[in-house]
Length: 296
Image (cartoon, rainbow, N blue to C red):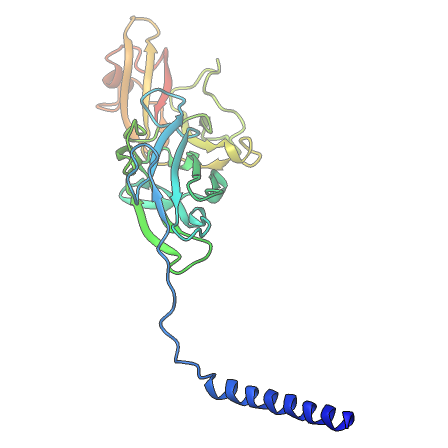
């Protein structure tokens, strides 16, 4: 009798289990999905005034007050915001440029030190060391895109600053207006035209120059190495030769523009009309006694 009851109970449990499985299967109907779940785009905020889609720009080291020199540093900063907590990736989407003759040239990443914001509300920083090749540029430009590592959307606004001297939406002071002047990473050189390897830089030496000889001007980017050992020739055409100092015998002094620009200079004899030494300096000595200099 006990065995029969046990068997009946087991059948009942099995029947109930099967019924439950059948019922749950009958009611497990999945709807078609909705559209994808989205958050909000990341934002960059200027620390100085809280402006959104904005950055702060500062001239953080200056060789010459009131000027931007090559070798100076310009720093961009922002606060990072993302409502969903997606991490900052904006610094992988920043490019600095220098502008010459209306043409923007991207600055190599080796001149830039970037650090994205480590936290939501944290600070992102990009520090540019102005390259030697930017000497003579009329402006420094920077472009950064609001980006997050994850999320949807992960891209915000492209913030394009054509000239950092106007700021990036924050409050100044901003870097000075161009042009960019040669600084600590630019070495000028004057060489005899016969010095094909540019071994002897005549600037600052007591070596006497000769009437009739031709001289060459060079600008070197010495951040890549010493002259003759890795320095890069960045000479441009915006330089002019001058005769400076005092004449040999008649006491004429001044800085005299030779009107020779962007090329080699041959020291003239006294009597050549217009371009001769006396025509340039008004001295009977012509170019004799003066020194050679270049405005670059």
